[in-house]
Image 1 (cartoon, rainbow, N blue to C red):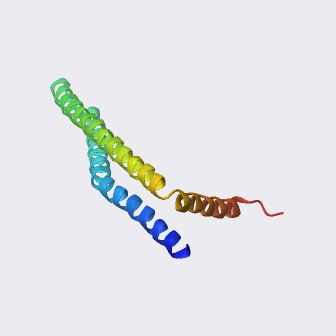
Image 2: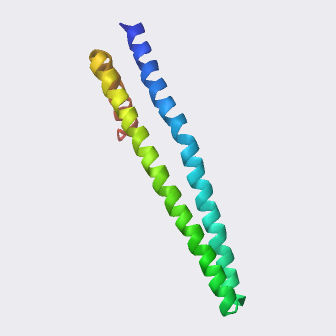
Image 3: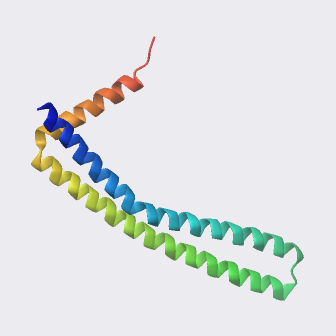
Length: 122
């Protein structure tokens, strides 16, 4: 039973690790897009201080374009992440339905560890 539990734990860990690895590129792209947006916003703020009416319009249009691109990227990433979370949830549900005893044992062990970690010491 112990070796089955360790195998079950390893399988669950592998599923979660695979899901995290699939999410990582989307997460990195989203972070990069927001860094670009922040850089552009900073440049816009600097140009506002010294821009003429035409320069202000160009800067505002550029910023609006970058903001729209970031929004689009965020929406795409959100859709992709939701799909991946849904897949991970389905995989977890399948695992639990195939291995109910191991799943309960894993959940109990995790609960025990969390309980021990969060318990107040007098």
